[in-house]
Image (tube, rainbow, N blue to C red; front, side):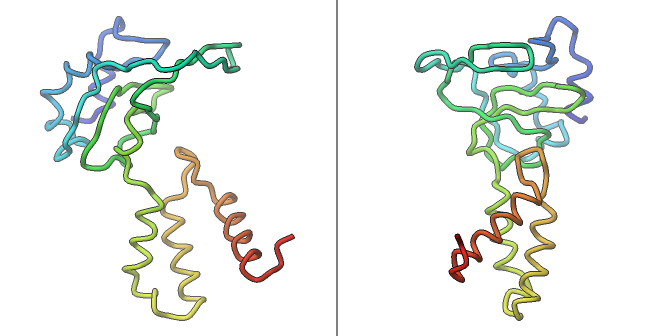
Length: 173
C-alpha cells in the first residue's frame, strides 16, 4: 500500500486546516500498518504524540493574512514525500496538501542531500581524475538532488560554487 492511497481513504472528519492526514497521537492509528506501507518498510519510526510549546507566539504574514506560529519542542520540518527520510524517523504527522504527501518530522530524520553528495563524490570513479572529470561528476551527482522541495536549486548551487571559487582565487569583491 502507498501512503497517499491510505491517506485518501481517511474520512473527511480527519482534516485539519484543509489538510487530510494524521497528526500527533492520531498517527497511532497508522502505526500497526507502517511495515505494510511501501515507503515506510524497514524504517524505525518513533511517533511524536505531542509537541511542547516554547517561547512566545511568533507573528508571521501568510497569504491569508497575519497568523501566529508557536515554536515547539522538538522542532519539526515538513518535507514533500518520504524519499529523503533516513532509517530512524521521529514523525509527527503525515498529511496530504494540494495532492502531495507531506511528512512533518524532526530534522535528524532526514538523510541530508549534502551528505549523500559528498559520500558519492568520495566513492566516485572520477574522484582521482583531472578537474574536468571531477567537475563533470560533481554536476551529475548534484543534478540528481536538485529539487525545489527542500530548497536545492541549480541557481543557488551555481552561485555558491562561483562565490567559493572567487574567494579562493582572490577575485571576490
